[in-house]
Image 1 (cartoon, rainbow, N blue to C red):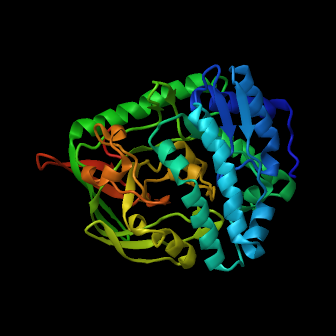
Image 2: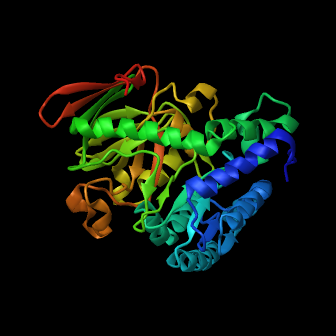
Length: 422
């Protein structure tokens, strides 16, 4: 296990981050259960001290019971490499039963993504794909409820040594873990005196931007950059949203900490043209670089990558829905995370440094969408899939124009930044 200074100013800010995750992230209500780690985001050995801080913060907030799902990437790697994958599936189903039971009683959930970017290096990609699809398929009922905002959830993170080694290779190894902790706290706006107050202001700022986009009544977006010439029609009656959401019981929560994006859902069959990624994607331990996609009638009709082609294929070929987009997200290149100037190899952070799109399932971000059963999402123009994988396309060379419902063209981004202040 990595050694880190669990004392001094860093420990103080870590505890503030834990309290932020519990009180703002999931907004845990007295008497509720809390699940820490689940599915592909368990608590890894290096994250145990922070998981303990989350546990304490949850009980301080009145939690009835805190469930921590522990994991180990070395075990997972060896199991995917040479274990019985049918037995792995049985174990995952057993984990799901307990998570679903607590969720049915109103549990909130905190995931802690921190995958080693080299986790599956050298392993048969067929076995990796089979294991990943199994995990996604088994947890799909839970994931569907989560993405429909039926309960409160958030994603936060804490370092592992393997992850820190990838992000800060230029530092002495003994300094990398602490450096990643400080970067996480800065990126998550948890390094100030009062992170809760800072987040309330941040949420309000993002919501003003979402409100501006909603007032425009956008029909299509046109993305232009080197290697990108893409038209994206938005879902009918779409809604731009940001930062916070509400459960059916009216509990506000923030799904991602950090978050810098304003996002909505595209119309499944309304995407045409080409798009090129601008940052590497760490997908469950496989790094994909130089993604190039071509769309016709919404569907990905060709795809390639400079590296990680097998991993990209495992995403796109997962099911029919993974050949379509599910999310459009806008993030300026001068966002605080972008200003850190560091590739995190972790989508929770990297997607908040760049405009991005998501391959796979949509969120029901249309008027009345949360009340429509998933099997009828097609009527709303929304895509469904086992997958929801964000990939980054933002750069200082990206321009985005909106064509509104009444035919006007409105500049949205120029040179990777918002074209209009709010």
